[in-house]
Structure formats: C-alpha cells, structure tokens
Image 1 (tube, rainbow over the protein chains, first blue to last red):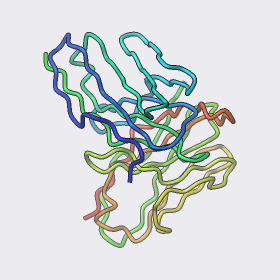
Image 2 (image 1 turned 60 degrees about the vertical axis):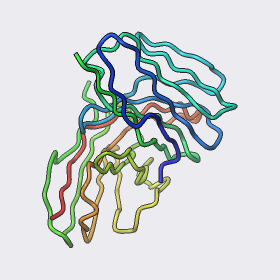
Image 3 (image 1 turned 180 degrees about the vertical axis):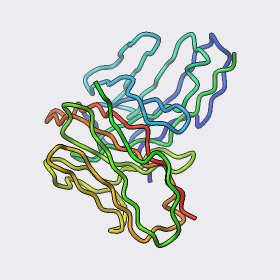
Length: 110
Length: 115
C-alpha cells in the first residue's frame, strides 16, 4: 500500500487558474520530492524540498513543507494546458526504498 | 546526454510465461530502481540495485527478480506471469548520495500486458 497520499485525487481547472495539490505522509523525512507524469510515461522530477526548508520556488511552482503536520503542498500558478498530467509526491521509506503516493490527476482546460 | 532507456516499449505475454525487461541508466548514475505502476495508481517500489546487488525490496513475490551488470544496466525478470502483472514497469536511475537527496530519473517504461 502507498505510504503517501495526495489529494485531491483529481482536479480540473481553467487555463490561467492556480492549481494546488497536497501530500501527506506518515513517518519522518529528510526530504520530499514532487514528480510529474504525462499520460502513462515516465515520471519527471520537479522539485526537492529538504526537511529544514518550509518553502521552495521553481518557476511557476511553489512547494511548501510542514513537518509538524507531515504534509506538503504543490502550487502551480497560471496553469497551462501543458500542465495537464498526474503529480506525485515521493519520499524515502527506510534507507533505500523510495515510495510515491497515489497521485493527483490535473486537467487544465483551454 | 542520454537519459534512462528501457526496452521493450510494449509487450504481450500469456499467463505462465516469463518476461525480461531491460534498463540502461542515465550516464553517470550508479543506482537502478524498478517500479510497477497499475493503471490509475502510483508507482510501487519493486527493488533497488546498487553495486550489482539488490539493496532493498518492496512487497513483491520471488517471481520478481533482477540483476545489475557492471556497466550499471539492469534487468527485471518476472516468472510465471499472472493477469495481475499487467502494468507499466518503470526503471529509475540515480546517483547514490549518503545524504538521501537522490533525484530519480525515469525511463518511459515498458508496458506489459498479460493475457
């Protein structure tokens, strides 16, 4: 079973709007990463946030991390049709096992 | 700079058969992990290889086995295929860092259909 959960499971927005998706986890982390997957292809790394960081930006992406609540959020600003994809948070479970949640399927309507 | 290469892209097998999937990691990477992704689900960790040894394994039966070669490439073997093994199999490579800040680079996957 997955040890990280994203919500919502699915999100549909209009182009230009902001998209926010959340990730919760159960055990302590050193870092948390967000990945994107386009339509059944491989995952692409978006951003890494360390446990001692609270917020990180990369272009139109903003990631926050709240270790006290064991949660993270990914904000995509001014969304585009090309942002349509599934988004996963990932983290280490143990030393070498890297796990992902169930993902948020984002659809951006033109 | 080539990324992660997986082969074959698609394959169809019947129940009981065996399959071998191949992965060439990104140049400079020394660690390979394999994932199974069922339709609509997140990737599930199968195992990780480093220095030609299986370093950790997920909740998969012994029918799933792997190998890493001296050039860091890897194979995933699945024996006695079941219908439930139908999935996208993803290979991810990384450069081992003791800090744990290892970014995974994924291949495009091998789509296995078991009939």
